[in-house]
Image (cartoon, rainbow, N blue to C red; front, top):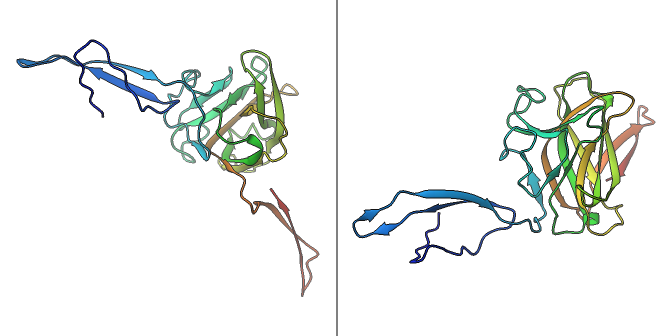
Length: 239
């Protein structure tokens, strides 16, 4: 809380952080007593968000339009949901949920503009199907880069796709994407879910971390083959 004393009916507040919601309280002060507080709130304009960038959705209301006043963008079918999604016993707090249907075929969430080139970044997050009905082809999600304005002309550049093959719907899987193959300039990281083959998609994401790709790349999978009594062959992929 910072106090500003003014003798006129206005004040300029400096040193604020971009993309941030603030609450302002105003009252009159006199020798014989102080007036009642008046209050309002405002959000500073969007600027560059620093990487590493994290998001757990805890600061948003569980509703369809709760990202509208922030530096995110969203389409119908993408919303912040409460702890019962996908299962209250698995994850508490808020998540982002995609409902891809015949009406909303490609719900999308677009992240704020970051202060690092996208081709130098990687993303990790937790993901889970909403119920046991939404695994395999019914959980088709793309992670990529949105070039242009979501409300106008734009192109979605797919970097990776994700499908659940979980036997336990209560599990949270880790999703990892390396944006090193992106060759464009500018743009914003985005996630969209796809309605295809007349299959509704319900999928949840949480605990997003976007950070720079380390010099020593992450190992994304390890396979062991040709196992005998005295040897085994190990192969891996660099993310």
